[in-house]
Length: 485
Image 1 (cartoon, rainbow, N blue to C red):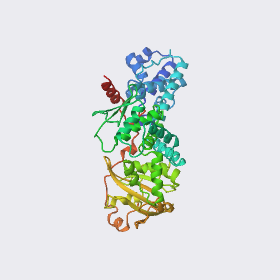
Image 2: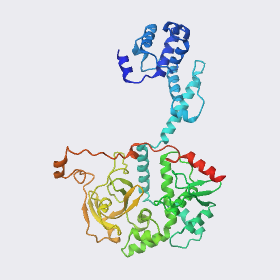
Image 3: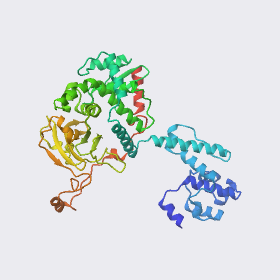
Image 4: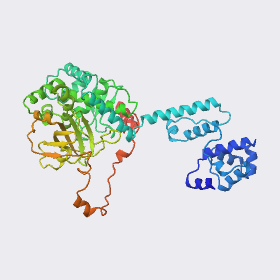
């Protein structure tokens, strides 16, 4: 009775049930014809049942139990009747699953004539293939882990990578760069020096920012589709994969590391190390450091300038710092620190996707009316007092704040150090800091509010699969085929 109730609650495991019926039939020395005659059915129908391709009626299950002298619990037993049966069940389930179907391989007919060692090898191969694919799959947990590990590596090196700086410096010397903003013509000369041609096209695949034809050494870019991209940066990032010797990433962690490295490479070309350090050193000497000045001097975005500052500040200026990119909802999109600031983090140490304190500069800046100039603020936190400068920028996915912060003792080097804006943050230790509603609001509305939450589905879903997550490979191949004809 218990087995019948369980079967009503859960879907039948037809493959396991079929193998048990076959095992019990053979144990009693019956042929398909013998058992089919006792059941009053055709041998072909019984064969379908034993192969897990036909669901039996309850009356037929009761007949089988009576013929074999077993209970329904035995027919629905959790354990396969033998090691071979267990392997056959596993192989059959695998061959009917989406992974095997995606491989496009012919199925193996499972019968008594299939040698045991072959059966074991096939199952072992399928297990290993599944393990490797799952290892590559970038689930939200995997993405957070990869981000955390990479951020720790960046922190250990003060976000400074001399080997990438050297590659960029050598290229700039080769094309005769003499200083100032890196114009499109210099970027094109870098591509030409490396043996790549550039083609602007209107129909770049939607899932890409650039496509490189490695066979014909052509980099395809598009114009005007997004205000979020600088064509120079996209081109230099594409070249970075070639210069840095990247191979197709084996997993999401490697994909993420390659993306960070190519971003660094592009920044090292757009804001060359020696020129940028000279510029920042002069500003420090005058106690006038400002991210917007670095932006303007090299004609890059504020975000690029802020990232580049983190590359050079500790190594060359002796200044520890932190960086944040925060969405208008308060969610951290990107973050880096080597100055001890306490970012909110989950149990695994992941910062991305966490909500930053409302009292921090990166949140306060959204309420500042003057969007032309940077907003500066001192914030007292459990980890110490920090001076931060921030701006907001529009993006296709909303408004973001971009902020650079330093410990109090380093504020003296920056323009805006004389700000009177000051805040106190007790996060993340004290939830009453900004997470708990004010008492008067809570008394009025607690129990009477039911918001419809906007789910952050990107935090719940697995990352798209493939070597390059989110990229439609078929679309890319068709694009290259079209443009190579």
